[in-house]
Image (cartoon, rainbow, N blue to C red):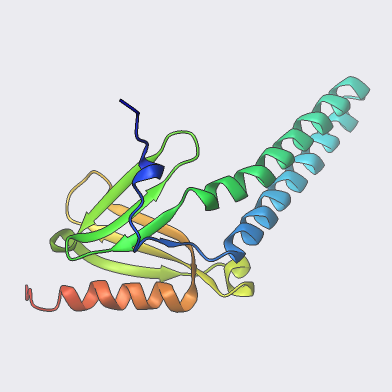
Length: 163
């Protein structure tokens, strides 16, 4: 008897995030690493310790490399698909997670873009649901057009319920 993982159970209709999401994530990790490097260097300058400076530089380089690798791994293991049942999102590098957002629980949706996402024409779709657990489910790294299309498909399904 073989063990099956969530990654083995990806349906044919599953779609990946936009490939540029890897670039955007890597740039974001680089900016965070640069900020950490500057802060650590300033602190080590004021306490006048080369040992602290070396540790800070080593730690920041490790964080940078891990972030660079993580961006590609995260992209590889994240997919989504829309069914009559709802929106499925599968993600996770080490701990894999498969989330179903049922159509009848969707309250509203948002499409958001930050400056880096605008540069690459990417967006984040956030689906808000009724209930407390996973009340907002984000899907980051979609192309802007796909995010709006998904939002529209999810919105149209809720038009028959008037409150």
